[in-house]
Image (cartoon, rainbow, N blue to C red; front, side, top):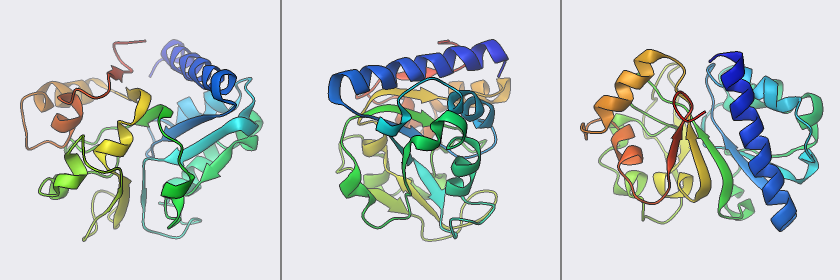
Length: 211
């Protein structure tokens, strides 16, 4: 993403978190893994905000130790929870009690997108799991039975219902190939992204066209 787009998205996220703090005394941000959001995290980490009142959650993670190089927790701690954002409160997704620590709705949910149409860690292999992709299912965590994705690990993920319980949901579209996947996913039910794009619960904002 271009620097000007990164700055626009970062400022928009900070504005929403600030509004949440002003209205409720706290705010919440759900973040994603992968390399694409790292420049955004660096930008956010330097933003002026009362980070001590911001709770940060992961939308998904690999089931590996927290200090493993493939861990999204490790990534977030090293790229977002730094600089001014080191005062934010972070809740690991691999914590068995994490659902009890969530106050819904989230203020902001950030989602990435894989080449197979997965988002968070909701892969095509989970399409038969109704609780994973039903926007009206009980909010819960989905644990994959087999290793998924690259790098290949078992995954844990918020289900669609939980991810959509948010005031804003931003899909990070990092390159033109991702835009092609999005257009295909509007009509292709074999792509997990289809169920995010066609739901009526929460508006999806796209980083490549809405900022």
